Image (cartoon, rainbow, N blue to C red):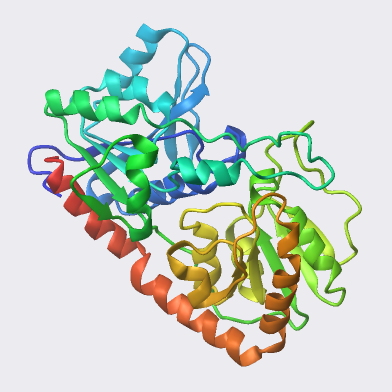
Length: 388
C-alpha cells in the first residue's frame, strides 16, 4: 500500500455489531470486523490505522469513544451536525463496509468521495428471504419468531449510482465465489467485478487432541434463525455423548426460543472466547450447524482449523459435503430433518478414520485459503484499485 504521501491510511470499518458483549449482539459480521481490526492493530508496519463506525449504535453527547479490540468505536449521535463534525475529524481514507445495511447510508453520504469496499458476507436475495421466513419454533407455529426479518439492502443501488457521478470508487468483495450470484438480487447492483477477500481465521490450536468421551458442539447465537432446538433434539438420541452449546440468545420474550427441559447431556456454556473457545472446538468430535441459512460461516472455518468436521443442513460452497456430512435442506422448524441428522452424526461418531480424514482435509483448506497473509495481499490489491 502506497503511504509515501501520508504516514498511515485511516480505515473506517462500518458494521452494526463488533463482537463485544458491551456493544450488543455477537455475530459473524462483528467477528469479521474484530479480526480485521486485530490484524492491522497487530501489524503497525502496514501503516493502516483502524476506527470502528457504528451503523446503528448511538452514544451520548460528549461521551468518549468506547475502545473495543484496541480500536476506538465512533457511535452515532442524535445531533446530526455534531456527528458529521466527529466523522470529518477522523479524516477517513477508506471505508470497509461489513456487508451493507441501510443505516450505513448516512455515513456514506457524509463521506461522498471516500472509497468504499463492500465486503459481501451474507446476502439475502428474494428466494432466500422466502426460505428464512418459513422458520417456526416447535409448539409456537402461530407466532412469528424474532430475528427473521431480512434487511432491505437495495438502497445500496442509490449509493452506487451517486458514487459513479461523484467518481467515488465502490468496490465489491466477498468471502466465497458462490455468493456472487446473490449480489444483484440483494443489493440491486450488478458490479462488473467481485473480488474474493478471504476471512481471517486466527485460531491456533497448540495440538489436536480430541476428548476421550464423544463431544459435539453448537457454535452460534441461540436465536430462532439458528434453530437451536434441533441440536437439543439431536442430543436426546445420543445420551452417552456430551453436547456443548457455545453462544447465547440475543432475543427475549414472545417469538424468542427459550431452552427448557433440556436433556442431561447438554451443557449451556454461554459466550466463550479466547483460549477456552479454541480448546473446546479442538477437543470436539463434530460441529453441528442447524441454521435455516448461512453465508460462509466463520464457525465452520474455525471448527475445521481445529480439525473438527461438520454436520449441517446448509452447505455453502460445498464446504459441509467436503469436510463433513450435509444432511439436506429442511425448511420450517427443521424437525423433519432429525432422522438425517441422527444418521449423519452416528456415522461421524462411529468412524474415527473418516472423522480424522475430514478434519485434516478441512484444516488444510482453511490454512491455505482463509488466513491473514491472503487477506492482507487481497486487501492491498483492493486499496490500489480504490486509489488510496
